Image 1: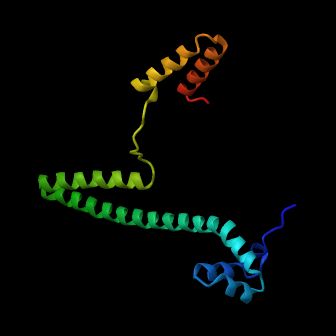
Image 2: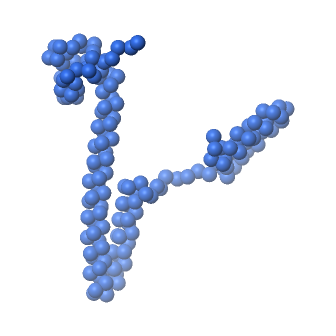
Image 3: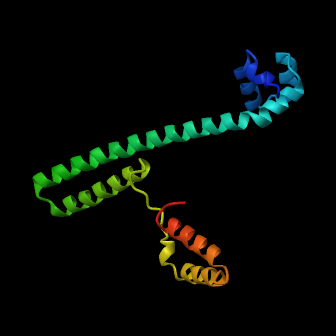
Length: 162
């Protein structure tokens, strides 16, 4: 049965990790907290990257929330300009404000993942895929069972199964 990490079980685990992140040499960390340098090396190599990744994800989420707050504040100001332009009947300003409102809404939708602009490839319509599929199926003509299995598998992929 594998041994558990002595650093993970250590009462001062957070302080040990903070010291490592701050650049304190592993040897000094080991002597300060009464652990082996090998244990510090093992922990920083095996367990700390996952924690750092979680921290990075949390930081990104916080930045996204801050960005979203700023975009929503901008949207409120833009809507106020649009309303003011309707009272003055200044159509140029109104149309410019409408364009900005639309752009802000698109940006909010992208930040909140409600709008995904990544391109979609319909492989089943791609001429290169159709040619490759025909070649594969043709090569399996001498093997009817394999050909049937491959055709069923390809149909399953095309229908979102597999």
